[in-house]
Each structure stands twice: as C-alpha cells, then as structure tokens.
Length: 246
Image (tube, rainbow, N blue to C red):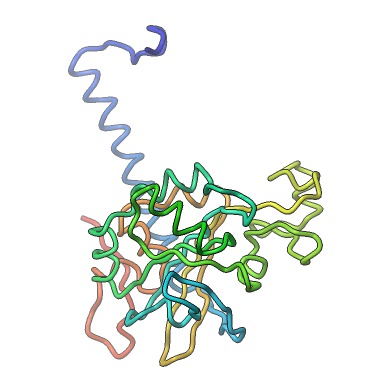
C-alpha cells in the first residue's frame, strides 16, 4: 500500500471539475501533437532492403518477404533472446503477453503482418513460446546479420556498435545499455516494413523507450506507413489524410 502522503489532495467537486478541465486541455494538446508526429512518420523516407536475410521458423527457412505472408506491411518486434539464454528477456516477455490472436487479427485488418525476431535458435524460441502459451509468429535470426544490421545486438566484433541512433562514443559517455563492458548484448526495438510488388522497404525503427508506444493495434499501426487507415479519401495516392478536430 502507498503511503497516505502519496494520495491525491481531497477537494470539492467544483474544484475537481476545474482541475479536470485543465488536464483535459493538456490531454487534447498531447493528442494533437502525437497525431502530428504520426503524420510526419508516415512521410518518412524509406530504404530498399537489398540483403536477403535468412530466418528460421518452426517449419523451416524463411525470408523477410515470407514474413509478410499476404499482407502489404510487416511490423517486427526485436525480442531480446541471446543464443546462450534459456529464457527470453522478462521485459520483452511482459510486452509479448499482450499479443493475442484478436490483436493480430486487428493488425491483419490493417493489411499488416506481425512477427517477433530473436537471435536464439528456433528450438529455444519454440520451447519458451510454449512455456508462455504464446501463438504469435516468432522466428530466429541466428544465422543472419539481421540483428546486427538493425542495431539490436551490440557486438564490437560484428561491427554493431550503435543503438537508438547513438554512436558507441555517445553510448559510452552516457554509460547507456552497458556498452562499457565490451560484451555482446541484446537490445529491444521495433521495425516496420512495406511491400511494393515483391520489393521490401524499411520504413521505420524505434528503440529504447520506443517500446512505451507499443500497445493496442492502433498504436502499432501508427508506426507504419499507412497508419490507422481511418482517414483515407479517394485519391490516386490513397494517402492518409490529416485528422481534423472539432
């Protein structure tokens, strides 16, 4: 139980209403700012993926293109699971607990596939997945450069020495993510991809506290090119329109 001094102040209903209206104004301001950032994200340039990454799923080898299935977008969670570990990261597991079949259905309704990717061998992934009772797609990048190229395995020997768009020097100076130890380490993140014909494009990645935006299907779709797909107008581009407010 929290200490009584941590409880909110007791006031009259009139005083509470005045404070609540002030907070509502701040909530609306943050919502508008978030929608503006989401619009900027949708207009972020993208990069053509030219490397053929090899993944391993429970049924055998897969490519990055395969992870899309019949969807046009792909959202990947970089799940921290070192090949030497027997269990996945507890923080990543906490987020993964929220991925339900209905969650995946809502993403599919937005033409978006979802998968987790880890460096652990597929046998360890499958064992941990069964232990947790999860059903979402989860593949191994153990035999590829995927984790290193996307900056979620910090390893000087592999030349993977940046994280969250910071150089090794910046990370070391601020003593972030334990890079001073010099050891290989797994780090979290999320990445979004777009499929045009059979060409895959990387559109967005977020790291560090970016996981705090991870939640319901709408929040995941906010990190993709096509967003929530609720404000489309008939146009040749089919581009999401800016939200309007009353």
